[in-house]
Length: 106
Image (cartoon, rainbow, N blue to C red):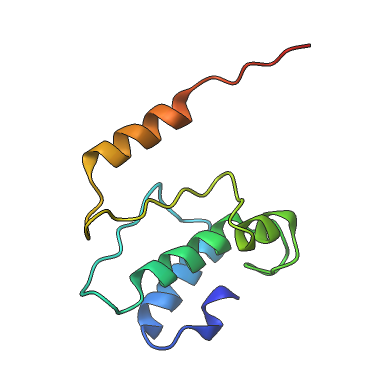
């Protein structure tokens, strides 16, 4: 499981794991708190668990986990804050980039 190596926040870890196990996840999550407490790490590990297609969540061996570990998971988008904040222009660029239709030539 992805949270095994994360120290602390047992209540939050148990809640997130329980939501996955029960199939009661929602469309979005917001991780808040002071700088340096591991919000990004928690969010990435949670995303890895959600996207895992193996029997054990965040198995590390399924195609999705391997893509995630190689920073090549197409269903995971991470916006790096600019000057400490995620800016609306970053969101607009990301939305525009991901809304384009693929062109297939046969």
